[in-house]
Image (tube, rainbow over all chains, first blue to last red; front, side, top):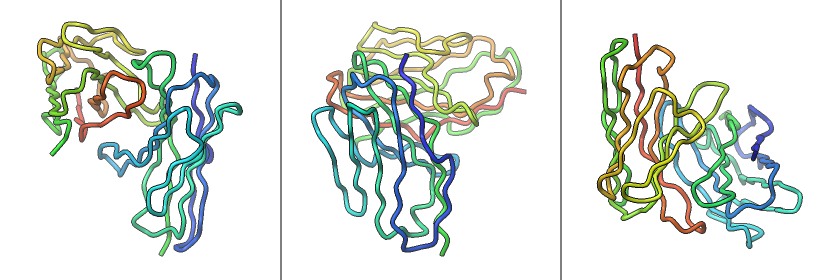
Length: 112
Length: 113
């Protein structure tokens, strides 16, 4: 059974810092990995989607990497802003397209 | 605009009163799924559908029903809601091929008293 772990569970940083969020998964036979952002009580917004054949994806200040063999992905946020404060979730699609497993998330607070 | 639409956004109901949460997508996605999100437990899959008339159980299907009569709609039915079904519910959709990611609805906050 696929398990997805996100560390740390919570993170507080001053504005302007670069930061890294971690996601690890137990079954490396994945199709893709997706990073989401969730604001309190709101839906999930897709940030980046990395296919199993890719090593990284970039969008603006965000960069996500994938190392399938070690079962790890990182989300790098450059020059953090207060508007980046949210919970970040990673989701792994594995074993057929119908099965997606989510981590519990990392709650990020960027302090002005 | 491509989106997944859930209704209602908020719902308070009483134990045992049947309810339906609707989900509709306009992206011609084959795959649709329902999740519930609870503090400390994350997102757990309730049911999913790979196409019209094809549905299957996720990790926590007890107390829920679904149907997929049309490609765009995937309603979640609680025949006899109980307080332990108080949660934040999300509908998601995707193309059927593995290379695509999910699109989520805005969520439905359900309270059963």
